[in-house]
Every structure is written in structure tokens, then in C-alpha cells.
Amino acid sequence: MRELLNRRLGVFVVLVGALSGCGNGDSMESFGGPTMGSTYSIKYIRHPGTPGPLEVQKQVELILAEVDQQMSTYRSDSDIERFNGLPANSCQSMPAPVLQLVKVGEQLSEASDGSYDLTVEPLLNLWGFGPQSRDEKVPSAEALALARQRVGYAHLRIEGDQLCKDAPVEVDFGSIGAGYVIDRIAAKLQEMGIDSFIADATGELKAVGKKLDGSPWKIALEEPRDDQQVVERVITLNGNGVSTSGDYRNYFMQDGRRYSHTFDARTGAPITHTLASVTVIHPSTLMADGLSTLLLILGPERGRDYAEKHDIGAFFVIRTDTGFVTRTSQAFDRLSAEKTK
Image 1: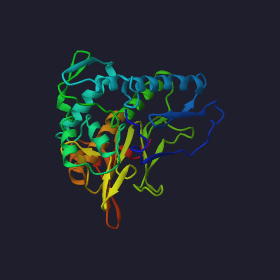
Image 2: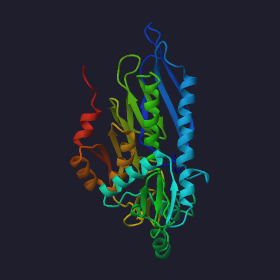
Image 3: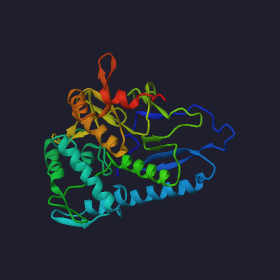
Image 4: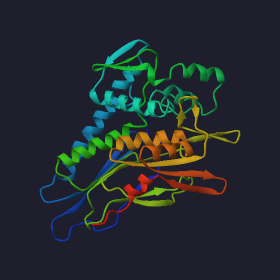
């Protein structure tokens, strides 16, 4: 998938409480490292008999290595890059996770009338945001028209275990890959008997259980600024995943106009509305990841209407001439509230 360091933003963990249990042998363990152009981190409560951090880290990094081999657009030998290099009217056998994410991408594309699209990599490269990026500048109409001929989720189809294309499209999982990774890691941790943890990869998060002091895991949402970190709101995850997408840490300015890395595939151009960031809470971090991008593309009005219609937990930050205003969906307020006993 694309390196996600500049795409991922808006969340960080607030950890308050003791680092060891109250005489019951429990302790907080943590580890992390580089992944997908950014970092990952795991914090979990270790009970007597629970695996230690070295064993847990080994299992987590096996997942990261597998996903990198399957989905990275920064290594020519990955499954998806080999597919991306094929001409039109080609098919290639793919591992099940790749096909799963293609199906999720298709669902999100159909839900957004084609604005969200996994095949926008030629546009990302043309505008200066992709793995084969050129200078960050507004392309010519001719170059844009050529790139758009190589974009469109409808050119993809799945036949058994094969992914096929009828045009020279390229697939990029940058908008859903990290969420998928977190769901895989969360499932592995629970399989290993770990019932309280918070897992983060490139800013996608999932928190399950409680901290050592019995309080829930909480995170702080940043105000969408590119000059400093300012806490906008603190929320409780309650076992859910969370993802934030925004336009403020990967963009360029030309002739006084902002061009971000988030594209509307229908126009072939970056979004230009006033929605600065969207945070989505969802039981599936994969879906939180994709939906945060989808809602950001749709914009402040269409995005909020979509969230309310589909009962999506979404937190919108809108840029104005005097600062930022925030809006939430009803589902967001419900999902992010601290649960009482």
C-alpha cells in the first residue's frame, strides 16, 4: 500500500494510570516499530500466563510482513504491484486478503457513486502524491485526461481466486489497508488470550477491554492544524476501531489554492471543499478506515447526510475563515461516550 505517514493524522493515545497491577501480577506491556512508511504500536495488559511482548511482537510482525508482501505499492515484488504492472485484459491469482479488500473498495465506490476509488494511483502520481510521484503541481488538461483513462473501479473484476482488469488500472489500498492490518492484529491478540489492548498502525486504532486501573482506553482527536498539535476532543473507543482522514498534512499550494492528497475519482482532482478532517468510529477498523476517506471526499454536507442515513459514527471538522467548527453524527456521540456500569 502507499506509505501512509502523511495521510494518517488526527488521533493519539491518552494513557493515564498505573503501569503495574495492584498486586495481582498484571502489568502494561508495549512494543512497536516501523511499518508502511510510518509506525505501529501495541499496548496490552499482561495477566499471569499471558504471552510476553517478544512473543506477541513476533506474531504481529508476521502479519505486517504478510500484508506488505501482498499489498505494498512500494515494492515491485508485491502481489498488488505485479498486478498493477499487467496490461489490460489480464488476470492474476491473488491471496484472499487482497480479494477481500478489492470487494470492500467496490462497496465503498458504489456507496459514493464512484467518488471513492481504489484505482486512483495514476492520479496520485500525476499530482505528486503517489509512489511514482512527479512535481507537486496542477497537471495539464491533456495529462489529466490521459491519467483518467487508467482510473475506474468498474474495470476490475474477480474470477474465482483471480483479480482481472479490462483496462490498465492500478490498485492502491492506502485508504483501507491500515484498518485491515489493525483488525488482523486485534484478532491475533485475542487469539493469544489478550483481552485488553490498544493497537495502532499509522494512526488507525482499535482498543479492547480496559486499562490496569479499570478505566476505558481513551484517545484524543487533534485539531486539523499543520503547525502544531492541539487536542480537539477526547473519546472512548469501547472496543471499536477509529480512523481519521484529513487534508492538512499532505498538500501543496499553487496560486493561493490548496490541493490535497484526497481525490474525487469522478473529477480526477483533489477535493476542494471546506471539510478538513473526518474521524469515524466503527466495530471494524477496516470500515472505519474506508469510511473516513469516503466521507472526507463527499464533503461537509453530503458526508454528514450519508453518515446519519447509514448510522455511521462520524466527527467532522470544517474549516472556516475564523477557525474550525465541528459536527457529529448521532452514532458518533453514542459510540464514543464512556459506558457506565
